[in-house]
Image (cartoon, rainbow, N blue to C red):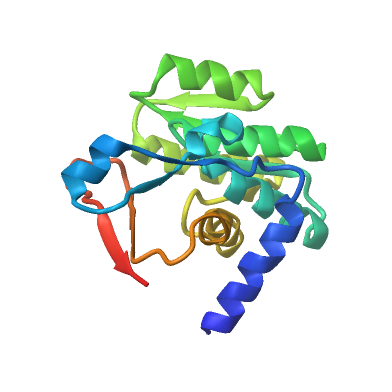
Length: 192
């Protein structure tokens, strides 16, 4: 199972090469002092659309376009995944429909529009799921889930391939895990 997952991530590295930015790793003396350890920050804020979400969206669109006749993709997102999917579709000659449940950032809304997506604003998450089903039916759109999709996961996994290439001998990797944006989400630690 692990070998299959890593093979998917390696394939994503190949697909994203020259498309996604190879983002820098920065350090902070102040964080080192606070943590009592050497801290390295993988700066995905320098990635296209300002987030690692571009990696997963681009990889998913590339893989899905090679296996399905559709050139129309849809997702529910209040920001980063929507931006990533919109740009990925624009770069690959596809159409993106992004369902944005309220509340959302006006800046992210403008960004999704700026990347060329058709935006569908809805009142809440329940309405968003219903609208997504409608879009999938009306446009034969392929739904690209922001985190529960094997192609998205593999694309996002390319961050770690770069990270271990840039910094040898990592002891612990901390990453923010967000399921639904609620305050009950907590950072998760993973030992290597």
